[in-house]
Length: 277
Image: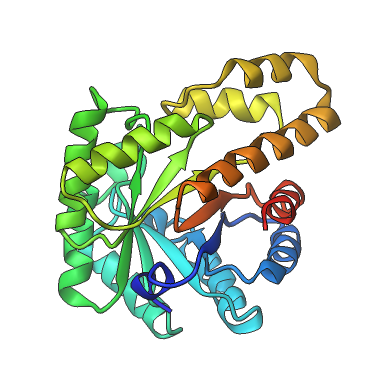
């Protein structure tokens, strides 16, 4: 089922996972989360050619063993057109219908990279011109960390949609008002595709510290207090309750789906879904 079909009908749950050497942990997580009948599972794939074969094995497992609708991530930084073509052929042979197209992180040593694409909109356009794949793109409710302001970031988002992007999956956020403001500004720019909020359960202080260094994410006072107040188990419980309330509010305000950044862990995500559905 392609992205247009997924978000034209009922409310959809989706998950994001990433390749890891402990594949048994990843497969156990996927087996447990598959009971929620996700509309799709997204997976990093073909980033700079470094994890292509490894990721492809996981995609095959998801598709053939778990019968899951897989959406590989394609990054354009450090990818040549030839590499993109090979990756596309590989996933099309498995019957994959959807791709999440991203720019990707710029490496410190860019001398080893191919630079046939500079921005995600160029990758989106290239995929759409040569395939029938549905393409999703990333959105940033508080602005991309490299952008000067949210308005200019949404302008870049519009370029991705005009190139053929069909769904926007957002970066995680903890303040729903930031998401609603983002959606309003997106609509004001004439963008009408579904905007799917990205949810990451709070698991540890280290996790939050890392994310706030990598991205523009406002951490509410209640979360900051919880990070200082609770031990590991209590913080995880707080994170489940906080995300459950966040998700219920989003559902009540008409979102078409929720996209969970699982960190390859099933417990918190599964408890949240049990709480909200």
